[in-house]
Image 1 (cartoon, rainbow, N blue to C red):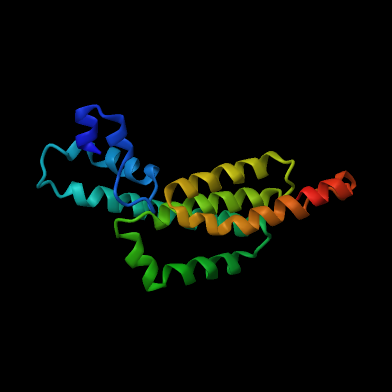
Image 2 (image 1 turned 90 degrees about the vertical axis):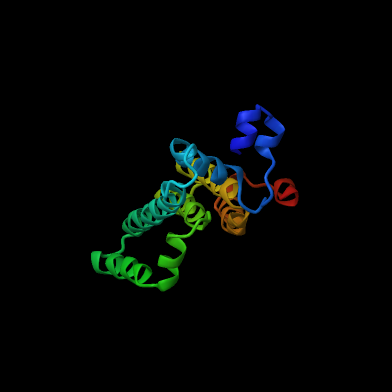
Length: 171
């Protein structure tokens, strides 16, 4: 990205080798290392992207707690869920590695948080959930695996009075 930025080539800026990770992931990491890019031996070139992953791990846990609170979980249940996730070794391995899994998970947790507020497709919370799900897909294409949840909520949670036989056939 830096070479494309210096060359001023917009096509080169948006072309990268690994398309499973979205542009937002590479852009955010590029913005994090820009202050240190002149010194290639600066350890912050390696630490800054890992700090972003760690930040999104904490972000995910915060929104998991908020979602559980919206779903009327007790304090003990919320603490057990978060403690269970924190004690998993895979969480710590993934949180300090250069990849977008926790960034994707953070936006998915934010989306699910808005779904836990109100799952009606006509609500502004549902629209925010769809927007953050789209951002999660833009971070990593794997987030599209949540599509059945959003499709189910969109199709089956509509007010049944507005559905006619013609509309059902279109779905």
